[in-house]
Length: 408
Image 1 (cartoon, helix red, strand yellow):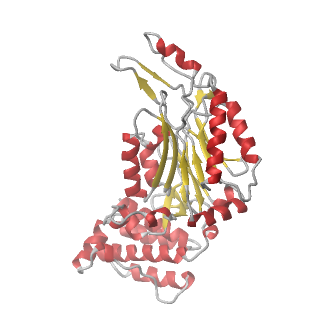
Image 2 (tube, helix red, strand yellow):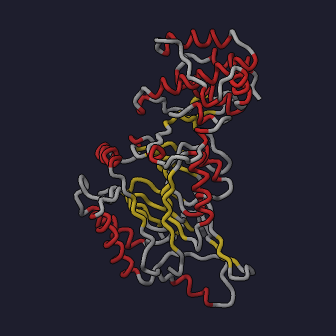
């Protein structure tokens, strides 16, 4: 726990003070301390937590308003001080919302306990189209989302085995791509293509034996010619349907088909062609670390150029019918959850199990991700649906899962 005097001291030590720095300190204070005291005070004054109003010294810019606000904060104690601190956090959230996203401080900023954060925009574009009645954290008390509708402080240090990589628009894709994505807001279309071709993996021939192998590497496809023909059809249909994003399943694209897709997209007029983004799961390939495989998904632009590559964070395990044997991936695990910021929201491509695996869920929740495109390979999607519902509540997120199974 952090004392109120500790908060005041840390705010006074900011040199020079900035709206981003003050926001992060107040955010991290409430992340540590909790919101109960502030909300109890509001309730004692007859104010429901959802009716708490933002505060900022009237008619002042940050440079003149912050000393006044800090002086008012010093003059209070107990629950009243926490209440004003929440209102100031809300005021800073709105003040920052008036700025262009590119002006946000990109460097890590210190939190209340010495850990660091990056301040990022929530950009809940898709959530504005949710049907009425969707329950989310921003409609509940005791949640920072209630009081900071526009921004979020993202941990800069790793959370367990994983780190969050905040990717502003300027760091992925060019200006033309992002202008096209901005234009897509009026007609967003996402096409999921789980494959009609039943892929024939030579590695699965051994599954006919009485004992399953301990590991499997799905690195080749015997009927790649049929797969390639279907991929061309899918991309052509995505073009006709003016799809913004086309998603194929996990472990579905071997090396030759990968190159053919890139070449096929490159032959189009990138300034007008659809799909604008294409995401698919590559077949296993050898990791630079000897004896291990990589399971990756790549995101391509309209010209076939690679914009992002996600490495799967956890390995699947396949059981036989009576669960006496199991087989899995021999993976070199990924460690990064990337958030690709754009006009459509904050995109985080994942692969299948990443969406609901224990340990990753906290990372997703604490990120500002709110659009999850997910190539998947699974016999069922119940766990994926549950995770998608949870992320809808915590992150106002939309999840687009393209799933298939070995047998089609």
